[in-house]
Length: 308
Ligand code: NAI
Image 1 (cartoon, protein in one colour):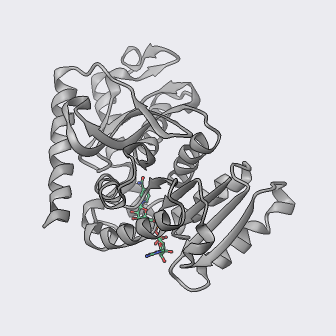
Image 2: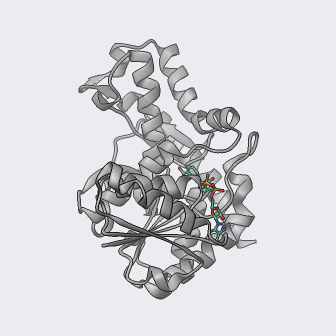
Image 3: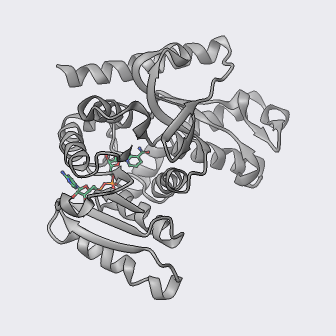
């Protein structure tokens, strides 16, 4: 199986690195617009095979979409990342043009492709990819909630001094500092609600730290993060390629689910060889329903910028 990653920058290369180490695909094509950049990154990674013992082949190309032909999955990370103080939404104009042309080129050479969108503002870029590609809705997946949920589990694990693997916690809604909704009331530590262990203030602090998790890293590092984004993206790709049917939060096209239509937003979905297979309903209380609706309003406003 062949996986293409467009954008050999921080997140794209880290995604590729995670995938080759686990032999997820026989062949990975890393494509970038910057001359020689993807070739260099791919060679560097390929040279770890003797040390790490994987069989996956990785090849870097400069804007050569013919090499991507026959890909099962493509990941789009091309675009500009956030700088300190910037919101994900400020990236819209530049990244919209990039995402649109990349999608067009990918579909031309791999009509059956499943596309995972990472570029920000991710929910809007995912909506744009769906509308501009004409692909069935199940084959366009926005990656954001998987990362935000991992960050939520990290914050919980720090506070509880628990293993992140023992925690169940998800983030739904938009992939933005103010639009994401960490579902603290649904979170458990080995099936026991986390509210049994944490005060209301501690829970509020965890939710806040999760929501500003990306921005915190951006101010520390000077650009946006890549280790957790790359690992989260690779997990989604692996669930598609290996038909694992894992449950992730992903940005998918809603047609009435969660009370919303004609919008891409993060909800729990099963991810397998079909792309996202089905949406898992949640019983939200009035407070969380209200938050979801506000999140949708903010993402819809961003989508409308595209239509102007
Ligand atoms: P980066 O700047 O390290 O890499 C982006 C790469 O895209 C560069 O190598 C650039 O040359 C390439 N590129 C630009 N235009 C292109 C085109 N037309 N075709 C092919 N390649 C092109 O950025 P980084 O940190 O990897 O972030 C990438 C994107 O992912 C950003 O928009 C960022 O905001 C987003 N992001 C999203 C996350 C999520 O959870 N959805 C998490 C982290 C980042």
